[in-house]
Length: 132
Image (cartoon, rainbow, N blue to C red; front, side, top):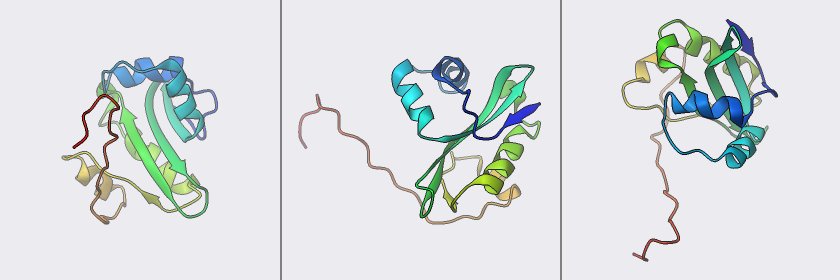
């Protein structure tokens, strides 16, 4: 397994097929590329194939968040997610805050993460939605 910290080679043509195996969707290449350029990308490759990715969004001083930690289903339970998380903890410029999908809290706790404040979301209004 090859791990890359701050993977500058990660681009939308690699990331979209990878993420579609985990979160199928209709992702825009240009918007994905822009998003990837704004995060610190820590990746795992198996023989050149992207199998894991952790993305950090940070202002570099006050705040950082893990936007996602993704590992292909067939590569899960092999320590890849734990290694990506270790690299993030070692290399982040700030404390990291993040939410966890229900059911994976134990994974984060086993990896030394502490429960913190509950999280909330504000959903973006779509322009075609009628006002409330």
